[in-house]
Image (cartoon, rainbow, N blue to C red; front, side, top):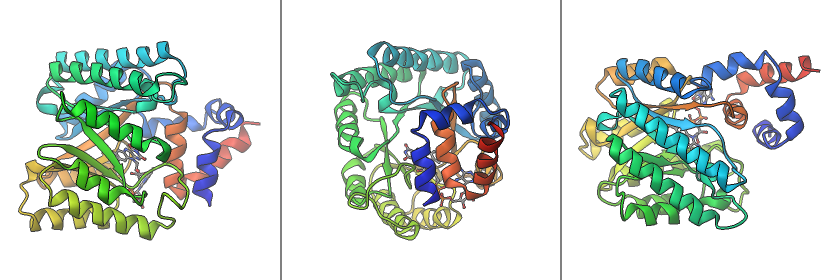
Length: 311
Ligand code: FDA
């Protein structure tokens, strides 16, 4: 219920105004976001890579409403990839990028799919030149079909293009089977967006069970699974499934969000596992922050207090 309310609040302009203008929110932002500039993002990437972690950078922003903005977001990504390459951070995919289709045009009133496809293709070309990869994030459930179509089309030229699957959706085990072709990169997460019961499992327990099912499909398939979760039980199940499938540590990776369970990120990496940190940066952090709060009840009182003191 609280999660639903918070996710609904993320769409409210009034709430956005209150939260973004409240100084107390800054501490939370700093926990989950690398900073506002490309230089901040490159610096935090350098620190994480030096600590033995891999990185996927996300330029914050979604629901782009005009083609110029979509082009500007695309240019930000291609510029970022150039800087990562120049700093030696993109080599062998150490730092890659994650892209939200709606940030590069999917939601445009006209030619949304075409615009997003062309922009993601530009980012893929820059990533290839930098020596790294791109992963396409998954957003609202209504966009899943379009996103999967974009990924399928672009994989003809960029077979290493990664795609996210949300275990909360009832369709996801079947999608995992379709996507997990030889060499393909699939990131499995629980899902951070609200979705109706017709499309999504209604309880945390059912989502966790779905995650375990999808995990089994990916681990036993010919692709490269990327297990995005902070859930200790699912991390243990993933490690057990990898052992059962006789997978080497280089044939899959764990992924976690910047600022969430950093000690566990380092611990896992110290065991020889590959661990990638999802690192958001940019000034448009509001909706990303609200999704993180919705996952973490302990942070909610902090959030509500920030609203109360903003008046
Ligand atoms: P769960 O929410 O059950 O959390 C397990 C434990 O982790 C909690 O008990 C707590 O200890 C800790 N934890 C989790 N979230 C926390 C937080 N915000 N702050 C502090 N502690 C926290 N979603 C999506 O819909 N589309 C996408 O493309 C992506 N992409 C993506 C990439 C990567 C690398 C990750 C790690 C996650 C995503 N997500 C996502 C988000 C994902 O769907 C999910 O909402 C979060 O990862 C939280 O789910 P967990 O699997 O961690 O489980």
